[in-house]
Amino acid sequence: MDDDSDLEDGKLRSFFPSSFGGDENGTNIDAQIDRTKRPTGTAQVKREKSSTKSSNGGSSSNEDDSDDDDDDDDEYPTSHELVFKTQEKAVTTITVDPAGSRMITGSTDCTIKLHDFASMTPTTLRAFKSVDPTASKTSANTETHPIHVAKFNPNSPSQVLVISATPQARILSRDGEVISEFQKGDMYLRDMNMTKGHISEITAGTWHPSKWDLFVTAGTDSTLRIWDVNSRMRQKTVIVHKSRLAGSAGRSRMTAVTWGSQVEGGNSLLVATALDGSLMLWSGEGPYNRPSAETKDAHESGTWTSGVDISPDGRLVVTRGGDDTIKLWDTRKFKQPVNSVAHSSTSAQYPASNIQFSPNGASVITGSETGHLHILNPATLKPEIVTPVTPRSPLITVLWHEKLNQILTGSANAETHVLYNPKISTKGALMIVSKAPKRRHVDDDPTFTTDLSQGISGDMIINPGTGLAGIQAGNSYASRHPTIGLTASGKSRDPRRPHLPATTPFSKNQPDEASVRKNIPLSSMRDEDPREALLKYAEKAEKDPMFTNAWKKTQPKTIYAKVSDDEAEEGPQKKKAKT
Image (cartoon, rainbow, N blue to C red; front, side, top):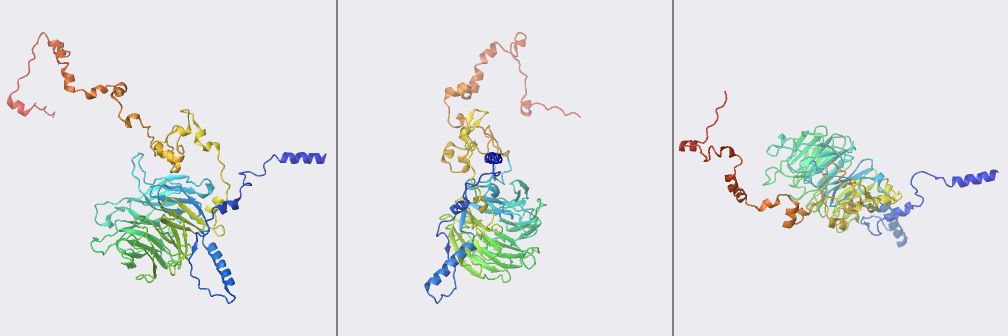
């Protein structure tokens, strides 16, 4: 009996699920990670090795070289990559919160995309929200502007600084909601110290390295402005750059700014560049009356210095100029660069092209015009690794995240690449490829869904403002999925987007005359002469008057009042005002 009961229990237990959640037993995680491995030969190691040859011959030297190549692969997170195609135009900025859970990208398509690593799978690499930070009016004709900078607050990750091509900086929440919009200055004031905000476009901005409530912006009005997040009506401090360039009238556009800290515990450092080629250094805590150090001809005048960054120890500053050079500066000797190398610039077309130190300060990363990622030695500025990311498409923005140990790049072809190494990287892209692909549900296909209010299938719902040719082309995610983001009646779920009615036939072509007379009341009066229309009733009004019929017998002939010439010139008498 016991054997029979055990057998029955075993059969019953086989029907029960062994665990809750998704079934990942059929997913080969290692195979998924291998599929994201970059093709062999994409990483070109250009490190100069000073190792001496062994006396045993060439076999031992070959073994040493292979060991060095393996060490290089493990040192830099460039062996695997994940590609996001969520923007529609060039990606100009990338930011990731300090915890490494959320990524935000900005583009010249005037939108920022919010991505959550925890909710994505290998088959669902898409943003969970798209935000236009400059769209403030509920109108279809709202002005939009390209995004220059988007940065998480390193000390308060719930805040995101967004700089667009406007005079006003904005702070958004981590969910994309606008928290604050800062004041715009009076453009008619000549003294920049008297204005409450920027009077022209802001080009760059960044947070204070240790204080959560301070950030700085650089504008084309020749000023840097330090803001307090709690006071949006006026900046805290104005730093005016007085250019000495001939013909500049004392002004020059500020192109880039960075705010770094010092390991020794001293004051933070504020570094900015200008269009006249100047490179300026201030103590981050003030005073700001004049720079602590300044180099007038750091880069060629008239070229856009798009990138500047401070090393983690606060001793080195690297700049990427529009004169096709990268220069390294020592904050203790700021007059002459420590090193300078030639590097093609993309700032003429993409002013947000940046350059950045690695989190430990052992490398410098930047993009190139050919779409290659350059990892440079900070001592010599010589390339240690040059690897193609988006060939034949300029690499605009780069970011090396400290906690994830992954390199994120944004390119002109609207692609965002996340480079990682499974051995040394954590979370982020590695967490995405470690999940089972999402199973496609029948409800994910809009052709199988029905709009109950109209009785038509989901693929018949036309998104207002989009043409049939664009939907058939399938160039973007929105065109491939026209019903995503719409209610059952075809209206947008975003309350800021008004519902545009369907296009009528009258707005497409000119209807014939018979159709106009049939469908539009009184349309025949459009081509009729109003004078002739009134005169045809003159004879009838004279024979059978409607309003003067009471005086037809007593006063058959109309008598008009006699007016003298003086009264005709003066006009009718005005009524006396009551006293």
